[in-house]
Structure formats: structure tokens, C-alpha cells
Image (cartoon, rainbow, N blue to C red; front, side):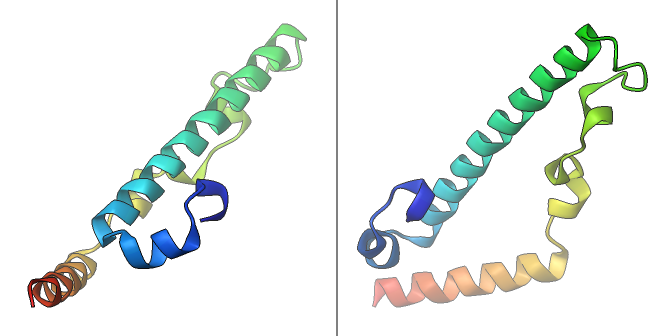
Length: 95
């Protein structure tokens, strides 16, 4: 849908949950790569202009939320909830 480029009807009615998850992860990965490339270019420009004395790494210039891996990991309770939800979905598909 939207920026991902999937028709709404296909997204809602034809794709399985794991396919939607894979699409979303791929889209995020592509967006992260673009933002990190932009940060690297900005870091190089700042260094070349001599204004980057306070920045020894690109992450000093700007930190991204996805760089904190701990915040993205689900808790045991969330994993159990997701597993139960997927089991319910899979059991309904077999009927």
C-alpha cells in the first residue's frame, strides 16, 4: 500500500501475514540504507569543510532509532502472543 506500492485489495485479502511482514522489513531496510547513506555524505561534507571537529563518527552527527537494537527486540510475552496469534491464523487457514 502507499509507499510500498502494493494495491490495497492485495495487501488486505491476498497476502499472508508472513508475506506482509517480509515486505515491511524490506521496505524499512531500504529506507534505513538511504538514511545512512545520506548521513555518511553529510558527515563527509562536514569533515571536508572543517566544521566536523566534534564528530569522529557519522553516528555522532545524527543517531537513528534503529541503531539501538535492544529497543527492537520483542519481549518473551510479546513472542508468546505473536506465536498464539499465528497458530490461530494457521488453524483457520486449514479449515
